[in-house]
Picture 1 (tube, rainbow, N blue to C red):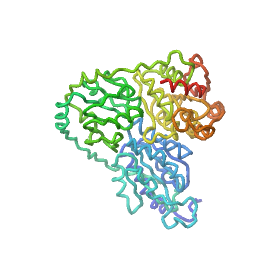
Picture 2: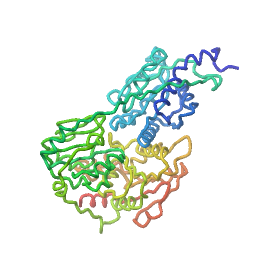
Picture 3: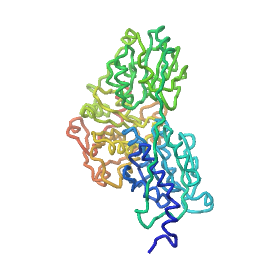
Picture 4: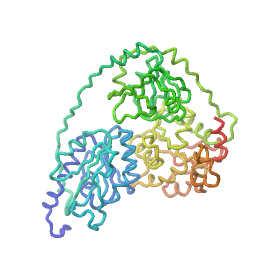
Length: 514
């Protein structure tokens, strides 16, 4: 008996074939993974991606987590990842991850199922205004229909996140999955070799010896690393630049000399002191080299080059060894301090295996790691596009699902509890992800920075103090759990969740001493 309430199978396939063709186009454009969320209106998308032989589907119930899991997979693989959700507020829950992807120029293909346009504002269930829902934080937004299929080619050619809103009319459930057929669209890579003319920059370099390269947040890039390692120029890095083991690397906390020429690559930097110093002491010229969105954090930008740094910097000659050697390394020692989350993170990082992956939560974890520094060959990721605490667990989960190496997440307590649904997968949790929680009973950073810390009793509105632990959460999701209140108790942690308890006041004193 048919489940189509009088509609034959041919009409269903005729009603949804354009969606299966879109799935095939995604596969042709390099999509290997789709993160899909349950729903009914998105049924043709779920069935299409679930049945396509070249695409692995990962089912996640919470769209907020699903978006960041997709982001993590795309960051780790360097390939586009599809997100799928049903109609209504489900699409809004992708917004934080889409925004993070926009500021990190990560290619997410966001497919939101929608009701037919005539049912919007008619009190029909799960029906809202979905077109342009990610406005100002999306590389391109389109409505995809049977009559407008050509826009898919344009959408999938863009960098960064793109949105295809897909109105789907009933019927859309076939009697048999065998009825679903995929075409084999041709994919022609139209990327042409980039012709690089860096003669203007070389002229500047020939006339100044005070040149500094400042590397903001960047993905691991072996070609760029090798190139920078060969240059006689100071390269100021922070922990998110993935350039921390360069022979000519200068940590951001050491870099307080004004260059005549500043060359920036990557995106944002962590160190606020350096940022304020460069705003107050601007260079004579500031070039930014990179693709995607360009910011001007020091209000000094004079030239922008839309090119990969490893391509544009190739062949340039620097003569800045004396300026490089003028940077005096800061002595940063935690010796003699009480157990606190600086000493705890120092020990955790020291015990990380080489060639592993470190994920850092926003707030204190990324700042502590930047202060301590990294000396190992370890990849580092952090949601510094918008620097939010939402989705930190989920992003790390996405990375671990896409990569077999050991992944370690160091995260604050509020960030962890906020994103606990990142542990809720509709399949097995990745065993190669270990989570380290810095639990000081609240948002300790607000007890340190001027402003919130000076508000007396009302400071608790910023700190959000609590007595929660992650032990029951670990039990709920079948993860091993270990707690620690001393350096010695950190030894032996290899999997599951390690929750480190520190005193907020001790942390504040140690932070102020630096």
